[in-house]
Structure formats: C-alpha cells, structure tokens
Amino acid sequence: MEQRVLGRTGREVSVVGLGTWQLGADWGEVREEDALAVLDAAVESGVTFFDTADVYGDGRSEQLIGRYLRERPDAGIFTATKMGRRAEQLPEHYNLDNFRAWTDRSRANLGVDTLDLVQLHCPPTPVYSSDAVFDALDTLVAEKRVAAYAVSVETCEEALAAIARPGTASVQIILNPFRLKPLERVLPAAAEAGVGIIARVPLASGLLSGRYTRDTVFSADDHRTYNRHGEAFDQGETFSGVDFATGVEAAAEFAGLAPEGATPAQTALRWIVQQPGVTSVIPGARSPEQARANAEAATLPPLPQATLDAVRELYDRRIRAQVHSRW
Image (cartoon, rainbow, N blue to C red):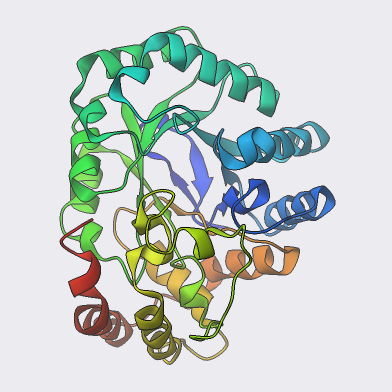
C-alpha cells in the first residue's frame, strides 16, 4: 500500500489506516478474538497505521492493540493515541501533570516506552490558544514519553489554530464526501506548514456505505442511537452531523457514483485519499472482511473529475446547509 509521511513526525504511514474506536466501545460489543482478527486482517492488507484513544472502552482499544503489537513485533505499526476525554472537559485540566499521568497510562496499555504520537482529543476550544498547553506537550517530547504530538479537532478554526503551532505534527479532522469544508482552508494550510492530515469519520458513521435505510435500528449502546442529536458528545461525531433521514437519501445518491467493481464505502475512501494534503484515512472495521475491503480502496484508480464534481454537487444540494457553518 502507498505510504505517506505523517507531517512533522517524519514517519511513513499507510494511506488507509485503521480507526479502532469500535474495538473499544460505542459501536456495540466486539469480542476480543474478533478485535484481534480485525487488526490482523488490516495488517495483512498493508495497513501500517492504527489510531486509538485512551477513552475507547476506557483503555480496552489500547490494550487490544498492545497485545497485538506484542504478538506481532515485526508488523511495523505506527500507533497514534489520544488523551483528554476521560476527564471533565475544562481547559484547566489540560496541564503537564495530567498529560504525564494520561500518557503513562496509555504507554502501559500499549506496552511501549514512548508513544509514537499522542493527540489532544477534541479539547475545549480555549486550549488551542494556551501557550502553557503546548509547552507541556513539548515537555512530553523532551521526556521521551511521546515521540510527537498532535490534535484531533471538531472544527476547521480549531484545526487552523493547531496548524499554527510549530510543534504540531498532524491534525485529525472529519473529512468525507458529506464534510467538505476542510478542503477550503485546512488542507492547504496543513500542506504549506508540513502538518499531516488524518481524515476521521470517513464514512459518516457508516452512512456512506449505502447499507442503511430510514428504518435501520442500531443497538442501544451504539453512539448512532444515543448521540444522534449530540446528547453525549459533539453531534458532528455521529453521521458527520447530518440528519439521519437526509443522510440516508444522500448516501443512496452517492452509491450511484461508485465505479464498477467498487463499493460505495471504497469510493468514499478513495475520494478522501486523493484530496491534496491528506496523509491517511482511518475507517473503522468490525470484521476482517471490512478491514480488507477498506484497505482495497487504496488500490482503486483515482476518481475522475466528473465524479469529483458530482460529489461536490451532491454536498451543496443536500448536505451543506446542515454542516458547513457549524464545523
């Protein structure tokens, strides 16, 4: 699989990585043996980049990855984790003492001395303007708790603030055919600064797979049930902030844009991979088959301009009014 340098880390990662939120929690139950099988299928398909967080299953996702890394030390995996969401979301909690404690816990969960990359996990907006926060992150690097640091953001303005910080290695942001706003300023600014872009929520919580109807029901412990309107965390994390009924109809149209031999999900991933400035896209997978299918998107030919234009037209007509001004 194609490898790209992840911004200021200087390390190469696969253009299709693996997001592991679903292996920890909030997507229904995933058994340990099934989770490990997903990790293995991704690696065997060329994936060299795992993305996790300390809050995914309260550390379960990190622990599963840690077990896999111990069993497959030859896999050459770059692992990014996140910190901050286990604490009450107050700017004053983003301090050096907490950062040390949080990263020490993640290091133990993953079984590593130094984290490849730690990302602030969608922190409160005032955090981005705090010199003390970024000084503390620099201290983590100096202490070799982490090799590099980054941010995962909710909004484009937060992304731009993070990119302006000289120590920020990468920015993780929602980007998919139902969320085009980052193309306008964030991706060009990141490219100019040498900051990597990790595209998250690439399938709009599964909408872009084209498998759902208005009548689809998700389990009670799935965030697509309990956070559909932002009840538990930012609404933009669930279906990219798009109303479910609208999203289902738009996804049906998007499915019609898939080239022969490609699924709608693979088409969405291919669309992301070819956006200038994107380093890696991190779809989740609940089965080995999904992990393999996601990785295969990297082998698809670039989408033609007519398809790119059709994606833009669909977004402008059905989605833009719901999400563009907010995120």
